[in-house]
Image 1 (cartoon, one colour):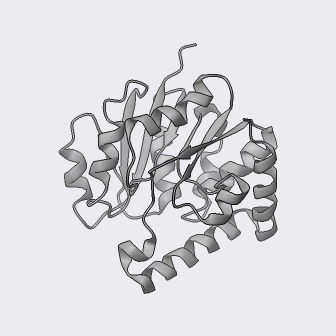
Image 2 (image 1 turned 90 degrees about the horizontal axis):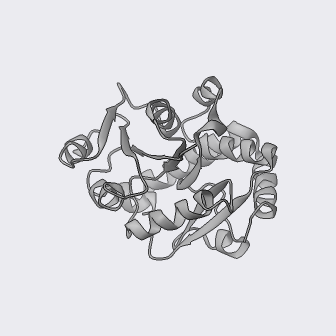
Length: 227
């Protein structure tokens, strides 16, 4: 079976940054399609995406959160594999995309996960960012999971996916993305709104799988890494 990759980019109010991200993925030879799911943005995100040939725009009827946007993208994706990319990355290049795809398509891993330059220091110390939004995985891993995904909080996708990986004892490749950063929420929203957004995100993760499970996920995924 020929493997093809669908790139899925959930976006909310990322008009200032998504153009640079799309420049790294649109036209990439390893990607069959690039899907941008706009989650009810109130800025010019939609206009930016519409102005870039090669990017397919899916507009959500209202802001429903990252998980719902990803579910919409997964449902529309035609590829055998999924490349998930956050819309706000700085410094992303086509080479970074190739690096993330290579372990999976080379047969060395079942899933690859990015470790960005500005990921929290503890994630660099232990060698994995367990909530990274940049991953390559088989689409089949999520078969039959739509209802469960849609029942998750707005930011529950990554930790739910971690549970699936641990259940299957998937081989995990951690790809260090030198030069790539994800802006802090405080830099995008102001420190008050940024702190509140971080708190909501952490709360969503805890509600999705349970607080003790979050700690166990870190330990389990670290042990599932392949070199």
